Image (cartoon, rainbow, N blue to C red; front, side):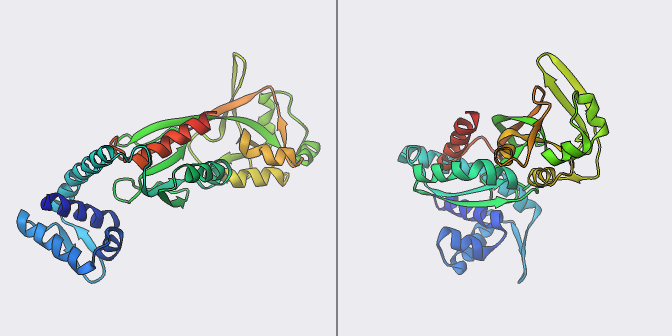
Length: 292
């Protein structure tokens, strides 16, 4: 059991790459944690960490040991939760990476409801467009929009969000309103900064049209696209709920309302299938709520 405990401590250190932060997380003195890791290295007969006054780094042996230990520790923690009845009332710190615009518009009320439902869970959210490393960084789950580009991770689809075309009444007054998707090629279109973002695929019943669009703005933020569209700068493809408030306030109007853009999928990405109860419940709750 002592070996398993030391393995768990080693995993905590590597997750945050800091003895001090790991000691705070597990609630033991920094000196005790350092001594336990040194004892573990002596028992194995190999150095697992390079330590300096400024940082720590994994050795080659440490990297291999971490990959094996993390799965063992995860399985042991999961078994402990299941046997302890924590699946019904999960607890602990849930660390999640969330897309900024999606989190602010879609998830804020859902997170509030989830927090009320599970008072034993505390939260640490990272709202950023960057792709966090779920193996090297201490995140339990990452929520992502669009098809996942993560072959070595586990992706669970939560929802498909319908998307439509929107523009401000002022833009349509100045530039004219398109009557067919092919006319979008003559308009300012606000595009996401990713591969094939300048190709818009639109659907109307069984009919499908692909249009090469262009414009002065290429962005990596759906929220900024929404704001620029409301400022009369072009036509945007937006998830229906993201545009809803501006539509209600008269800042945006649906364009070609009989046509729908490709729905955007939402995924929960995890490093493993072996999930603690807090993460399982969070993913299940989002799938249920967003699927509606």
